[in-house]
Image 1 (cartoon, rainbow over the protein chains, first blue to last red):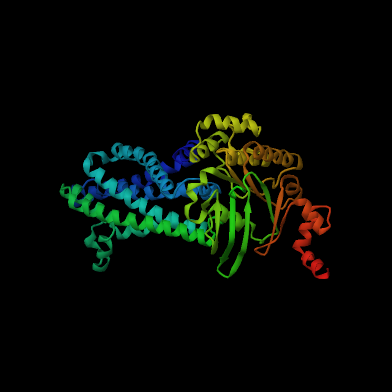
Image 2 (image 1 turned 30 degrees about the vertical axis):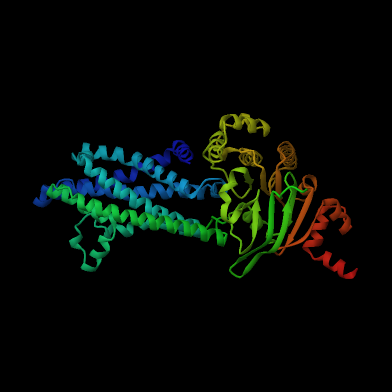
Length: 255
Length: 251
């Protein structure tokens, strides 16, 4: 399956371009904004890279899920799902291939953009070292869980549910506090925020860039939540596949 | 002693909400046989085939393929089956070779490259192997779909309208290849079709469905004799329009 998606990416410059285009636009916009604010506010002058770091980490979360979901949607668009469902491909193998492709697509988009961040703003994402590995692992796990759940919804409900693939992550954008601390939220929403693994990552990133402290405790809590989220997502996916087999919707993968 | 059926459908019922798509049908297909599944739109053919493939879970009843319950353990036999349908496409941007390679790997075929060469030669696709699938004519696409369905040398082959949208010459050529494969591999073939010429030419048994039930099930010569018709198309029209029931009532 990975080979199948790799052939597709290789054959389409438009798909490759799209992988780089949006992360680059986002990073440049937020980067220049940070430069401007940094020149005019002492806090941001101290906390160099918070915005760019947040943009790049948000992109790992968002593009990771999108990479997973778009690979799945390619099968729907190509009307190839029937061939796959009828083949010996097992759900866990399909999910694993989609996970690998989400990393491949993410790498194609994010590596050039992270290099641009060094060139334009002197922000070296890789300078975060081991912390980056912890941030990345937690964000990609969340993106896969969301991707698995959305794929199940699309399998069960057809392309009518496609909009979830493009928009569901934006629900997390304000609640997971990508660009501001959790304390900014009303108290009720803070409980919601702390139930979501990415919140721990973005708090951890701010702790690292502003206070120069790596909060391993936050990463471990995020990992535990991610494990629970993954179990729930896989269970939901299998239930949705089962429901699709009962309702006969695997045959009707259109709108 | 009779061999165990390759496909056994036992009291199959499938109800979608309030609609009964399949209503208690039973049949068994012998290994190496070729059978036509006929019926008008909404007769229940697609649901029956989808249940045989394990894509649909029955409301009640049971479907086994090569002795395996398809609702519960389909992955045990999927590598020994395959299917072809004009309602499912191969990825258009991939070349024929890439598509066949991916499916060959999914089906666990040994020596995928060798098998691709073999199946391409059989289906006259050798010169097209490196062309994107989306740039092929309808006839060529059908041959590619057929190549995919034969890539794992299936013991059970399910074909849904295998010659839909093909010109008569290409359709006849494709039918010849299907027959050739069945004889060579002693494969069990089930064909859902609206094309009576196809069914008459290929099938040694015909199952006619109407409103989720089996209306008739026999060899083509017996059906023609019983309905007093010269072609299966006339038999099909008799069944579809309820003339068989009227004739029986009159007799």
